[in-house]
Length: 312
Image (cartoon, rainbow, N blue to C red; front, side):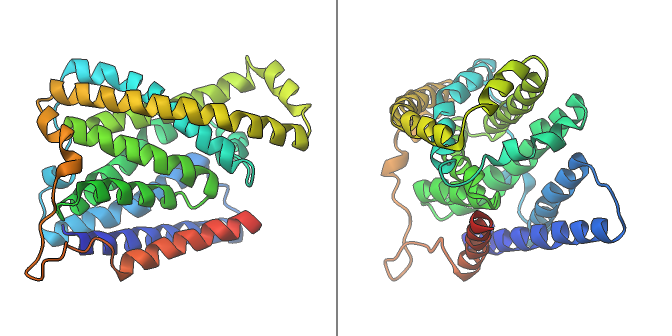
């Protein structure tokens, strides 16, 4: 799949997601259907994944090329949790900055999550969603953009789209940073399996933390509830500077670790020279276009929704 088709795919994924999820919400309201969070999450993820599968079938691409789930060494797999820990300060930093303007999106639906059983939520949010999202964003879209020969641009663009897909400022910010680091991990290992593992560990840990806070962490929640909005804002502002420094240091070490993993997977020479890769040019001496009108339209829809939700 080339970049132009990938851009059409992103637009279709966004439109399908919006139409289907909105339609389901309307049906539930009209017929008084109480649909569980696990069901709505499944519908939302499949509304993006099914169009992706259809595009692959229509373009004739091989699934192994679009979904490079290649075998990795055990040592590489064991280093993935360490890599995740190193990039977590990036999430904390983005989360703190955006919470100055909007609420924490995951925390806002914690009641719905906690109303379901722990195994179901781990399976839905911690395992199913990361697999689908990695296949779509680090799989199909990233590798389609890579075919332009512009690897860095592919990393950045796939991360931007991954962030925008969440359609809220809070998640979009840290999802963008995670998208960058997950794509780096894919390039270091030549497989989306490590990014899947990291993504599943991240989401599962968030779910487990929620359940722990609702049970054993009740005292902490009660203490946090006593803080005023102004005190919370001051605390966030005070944390941004230190978090930024820690995030940069952690990201730098994570990239070094990614290089070590690339050596384990016999990709160190390629990984070390990613920034030096020169993209091919056409007969006019211009680089292949990676941004087209359908992509701009799809991104515009996401940005518009993010803005609307900010002021809703």
